[in-house]
Image (cartoon, rainbow over all chains, first blue to last red; front, side, top):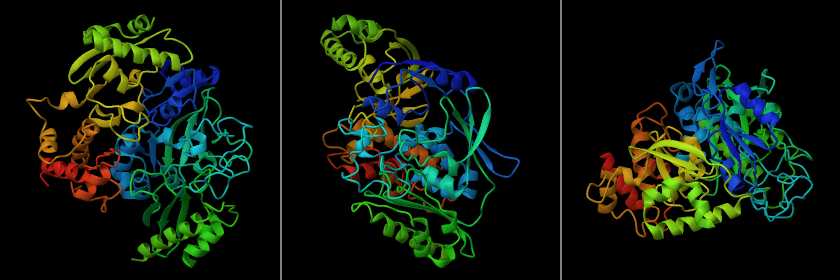
Length: 316
Length: 210
């Protein structure tokens, strides 16, 4: 690990300003992903601004009938919150499908959105990687790509966003609230938060330098039945090959988003509109522009079967 | 000189240890850590926290993980370093009542925190009920993962009591049960290469009264 200096931020605006103005500075919250990457020197911050004292640790009702989740609320606390379990069960299910109990206790809501890809070539510093080192090339193209992306990817990078929580947030149309280094706030729909990175895979979100996530807001509950189906190589504690988050209403309409397939939680509203026609129609629409490799083309029929299972369960 | 460098990092740690050979081996670890970084330790950061009910104070390189602070600076070597990347669970400790991977946490982030390690749960002549159950049910073979397994197991039963759901919980509104399938899912972050999983689940079931 490279050496770095460390401070604990007192206010969000100060934290944002410090990170924006200090070359090589980064925020640290739970640290479960950042420290992992610092140990292998994929991440090499020279200064860490610890945001744990900023107080974004509450879950509150909003005037609109939704929930505002502080960015520092742990994955465990969020998934266990009574209102989340009752009204946003897809979020509880998604969070509990990810990582381990130890990691969920430390991982935060804001940090989880910023989790970096689990592409093995990104982690292997002996391999070229455009995400790690822009212009370096992509070892995954022509490499082992079974785990990697099938849609929304580019010639520069075929990695995926690896998380579960954000897939549920995409179905719920959550909004990410931030504070910028100049102290102004902004609200970013989760649909726009993660980028389709094209030829700049090193930039994974629309956050500006120093912009700090303060909360995630859930709109009022959708009702319906909530599902999160995750398909992976082990039954527990593994990243998704494919995951499906869905909220299905009594009339068969609803919303669906896919994880493990793209640089962002993958939801196509035009595909949602086909839910009453069944999984095949939805997946055909959602993955119409897919460009999988030989090794990961199985993900598309797998997504269809996972969704078909959900729709069968929804019918009871 | 390596030893000087180490003393600068953690004089208190060495004095607390008080064993020459142990201090020498720790010095070599510190030396290796320094060489892997961009520079030697230029400044240390003070840390005050509570470990197993005792107030502790250290001056640490910012890079020191909670795991290394416990093992190399406080000589609490019950907590093990397995993968050092949050994958195996051998480093599991309980911080402010919740289990975490101590390898994926910077020590300086734990100012004021209350840390419980395997040494704080019980001792050889006063075993924690979970330790006694692991012995009774043969919940280990080589023992390397055991401190992490036991810290995790104690915390898992607490999570079930608090009603925190898991991936295998069918009814999110119902009371959580310490069933075998729940215990296995909740313990998936603790790997045992000897494969003592069945016995670990039985030990946990006994403590849970299931």
